[in-house]
Image (tube, rainbow, N blue to C red; front, top):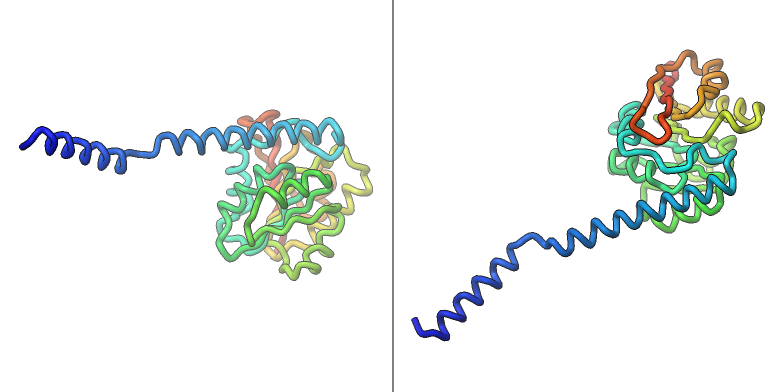
Length: 225
């Protein structure tokens, strides 16, 4: 083999190896983008908490472990329609969309106008509908968007900080709109939600999720058929 052919052969092998090698730089870029997005969500969440502490249940978004517990508790793998109350910056929303069937729909109801706008801009999924408003009007929002009775309602809104009459109306609305056999799952720092939901839905299954900051109680109610 001539010297030039030898060099050309090695160059060709090198190019082939580069083509087959994992795109480490691209993986690093994606990792950095994901980390930056998570940081932005934490900052936005903290700002929302500082501006409206009565509307936001925590100072930072939920942990991945908590998100997966909520997915299992609500049985989202089989849900046709889910209502999320208080999606915040969208960390839980993304986890729910990943778990839900391709034909399902998620109605996210967010009281904070900035959070609602952020959700619309950052999550482009045809299964997601974001509305800005109060959880007192779940039935109205479902009707406006032609959605069926939800198989699950998942709530992160802090029942402990809202006026009692508002908390009671929200609990009654959740019980009324749930499909037969549907589940209401609430993750809360304090146990007040049970005082409002139990008169309408009976006793809840109660669990702790300690791998979260702060640790939270997870309540699960199932509506009778």
